[in-house]
Image (cartoon, rainbow, N blue to C red; front, side):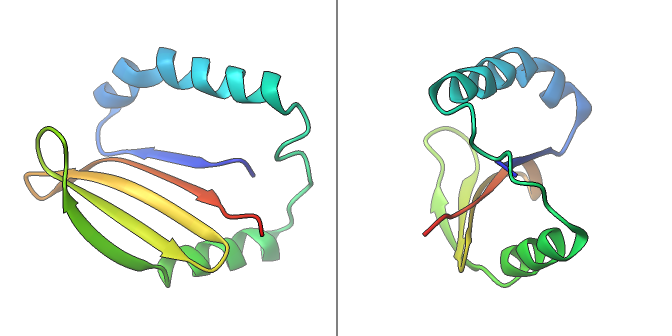
Amino acid sequence: MVCVDLFGRGRTLRHLWPSLIGSYAADALIDPTAGLRPLGRADVLAWLAALAGAEATVHPAPGLGDTVALTGVRVAATALVHGGSVVHVTAFPVVS
């Protein structure tokens, strides 16, 4: 698993999709083997549990809303929250 991106609205995903795919493609060119390890159900559940147990800190976003940073064992994530709704979350494993 390389990362997970979640969007609060489909139109946000549609708007960001081209740049998101470009970013994923660039990452694949830099390290073509990243994230290729097969994951089982237990791996995914452990990662999600680590995400759920991560410590959250809230900071003003550069534009509108707040940035929520999640840090935990084997996981990191950021979320943009505006008007009480999540706009975008990106979460990824932290490899030690």
